[in-house]
Image (tube, rainbow, N blue to C red):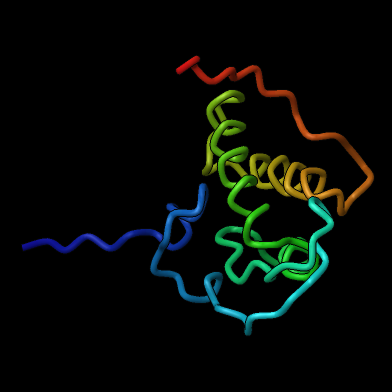
Length: 120
């Protein structure tokens, strides 16, 4: 009987939990001033895919509430721009977008998404 082993990081995008524990380390709860909402809130503890300098900036400047908003926005960006999550250029694009979303990096604007939710 053949066993299948998921590739590390394949399901990392869009907040999916995955087994590669290196990128999902929990940090102690800390209160930060969120760069997006300006509130004194609990810092995000898991950044799913993001690593290195981008990850450190997110841990220092992003709150849990705004992180939830980013996860929804990230899904819309992946769908709207038909991003290939296995392509390294997608990583660069989403790294720039998350920093722009949180106002951490002044090098760009958040990409436009034309999604309009249906009227209830």
